[in-house]
Length: 282
Image 1 (cartoon, helix red, strand yellow):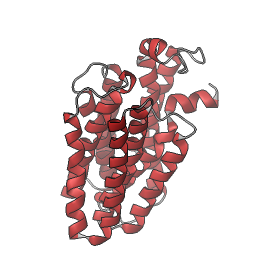
Image 2: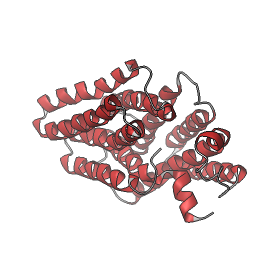
Image 3: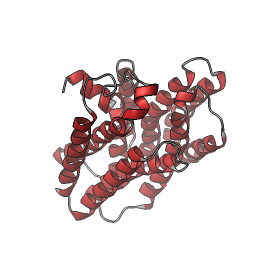
Image 4: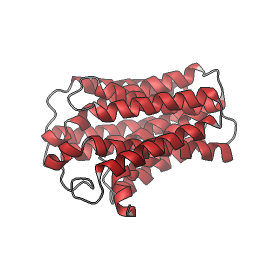
């Protein structure tokens, strides 16, 4: 497989959001330091994401042949069977890496792999598809947390719930990307949950206020694209909201009192935007 093909199939421009999810999960679980074990966690969840993206293209090969013929499979760069094999192989490797941390992280990995495969297989015209996608990100939080402790604290569950709300709103928009319009706006109400919680964090911990302003401001920029609705605005809103995942991670990390690590998550936002300029994020 050519490197260019692998990068397109894996939509690797969005990988930094997976890294910041992993960082947030570890911080909210009470991680006191980061070393080689954290690098293994980053690798494991990166493989989950990349494998899931491969399987997404493999399951969507028929749809892409009509709607997105430039994608690697319909364009003839690689066969669907090979993409399935790569995707499943990456998933297996991810689970094996989490098993190094114990049974609980490995089970979280199996659950995550199941959620990813189910979403890839049955996300078209699935009313609950955005919820399943949100659960995939939730399981990164849970899996990363279980690598730190088996007694996951309330802060991690709150963060995971907020990420779920954010992904429901984001994924609902992304599902309509090829329509050129957003037919219903009510799922966007889910995006209000992290904004409201972030406002509370900013009042309780003023240092988190800057991260809340950045997150809220960027989300409003993305929603403005939806309101304007010029050609290409919906895909632009989608990739903007995807990059915003790292901003939400940064806000949650700052709310936990780890401002330096929140800065790393903020850097993940910038790196995502940079990579999206060269590799499609959707």
